[in-house]
Image (cartoon, rainbow over all chains, first blue to last red; front, side, top):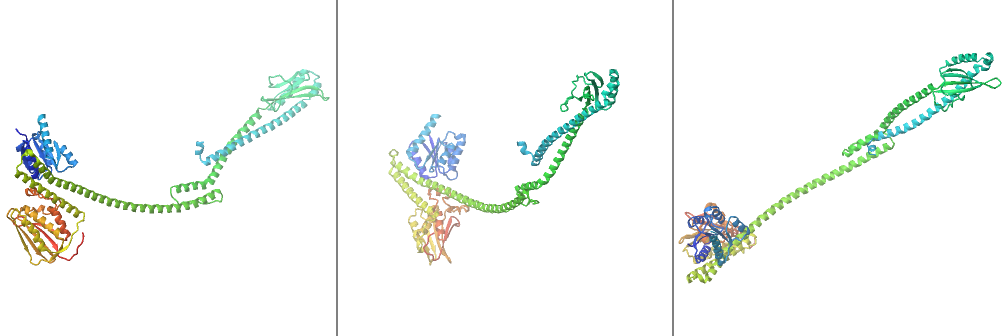
Length: 127
Length: 511
């Protein structure tokens, strides 16, 4: 079964860009455009990994990350924060909330894909 | 020495005088005592010799010898009787008569144990309680016919002398006491000014300068007291001057301290403001950076995607992505110019180029560009007063405001709806309102839409994201024209953006 990735970003172009390139790597992709929708999709879609923006309508990425990491049901889900903010404080906050990776925009697609592959491989080995 | 220093001056003086007194008195007494003793003893010596002479003479030894014709027994009886009578004198202890061959004739009284050597004791060197006096008895022709020895008791003299010494000693002690008392009284009297001086100086030490020492004499102490009074007076005026100066300095210090505090508070406020401004600035920078990165991400990402051969994209897909790149590039350009405009406005660097402009024409021209670029088939309707005056304004900036309002209206308008633009002239201003039939703006957000980076949270705003600065910049431009901008509800739905511009003759100026 293909591994599932949920992309939560309010920027349509970026969602399109990521899903296009990740689908090509044979991942199962679902998308959400705000925090609320994102949390719903986490429950229904049960992804292996979430690509999460921080500045989201309704519920911020921080809250989404916290809620996922607090819930033992979602323990296995890796969270990759992908944000246009490159501030050191945001990076520290991401890891303190339990995020698995913190990546900044703009990015090279190849780099993002490689990182996601690495995280998922590591996880499957550990399991 | 330390203990000595602790003693009072009076005590020391009395002690010294007493010691000197004791030494002198004792010496005097000793000398006097000796002198008296010597005189008495010499007198005793003379007297006893005389007495012995008298005794021996009155005994008439020669006659007795003759009378009793050398009958020793009778001579002895006679002499004993005679001696007994003499012994009635209490000072005489014994009387002894001896013949010319030193044989004892009569021994009456308590004789000493030692053997007689028929010599008198040295009067100056008595060591017994008895003084022995010896005399030869001569005949009329001058031949020695016998010897006499008489013992005088000198015990009384000794005790008298001792008593004398005792009384003298008592007198001495008494005199010491009297002298001490007198010295004490005199010293107390003389030292009284010194005591007053001491009290006064204690007062001065305690900063009580209103104390003068009475000057009762013209001696050294009087002079010192006088000098002291002068000194206190000087000190008083000096001190009060000093106090005034200190008070003045203190109040000055107080004032300057207060000023300093005020300055500090001012500085703190300024610092706080600067800090806030700095925080706002860095927040602004981070927002700007964020907003610039977002389109850049799309541009770079789609460019990379198009170049990826393994995706095997169709031409149709590729051109779609190229359009995205184009759109995002335009967006990036708009963002940059908006950011620049905002920073110019915020720093007060914006220069309006005022011109007398036909307002109708300006609005018409601006709306026309939207009519051409109209993919929602929106009907732009302009209603205007026929004779709106020429207005002094910056046409580029006012056009920019209108564009911002129109593009917002268009963004939220449903397809095939209308956007109505109404121009109306009042007594001293013109009013432009732009009404759309979109979703409208909730009351609580009507003010916020003019705030920096404020975006209404909905699907439309997400899909066609602006800089979040358009209305902020518009508001600033209108206010620089001394006009007003606000938003109302359109009935039954949608919103109306309204702004006013004053009609007046002002020349080109800078703000």
